Image (cartoon, rainbow, N blue to C red):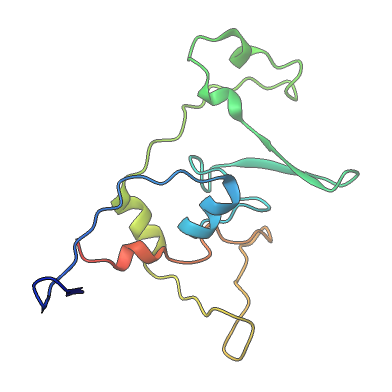
Length: 140
């Protein structure tokens, strides 16, 4: 940057403390998919979902695991395919965990030459991450 008063160049240092986004912006900034099967920012690949053919929507299941361990709804199976849910909630991931997930992602932006479709998994679901967040490249 240029300091007009001192007439010299200087290195500008800044800090991004927090961002507040709506759901579509979260996808654009982070690079995580917010469509189809991989939308939960806590569960990642451990997400239960079902596609309803009649209404053409993806429904996300398995939220009882976020309730307290002794909650009575966890034991009820009448409304949940006759199954109780005793799983624990997913562990919080650190920045290092997320970096490990996105470090090998290769992205070609645009619709021109060199753009290849993103490969899907064995179930036909798209990947959780579409791109690597640009802030991973900043020096800290």
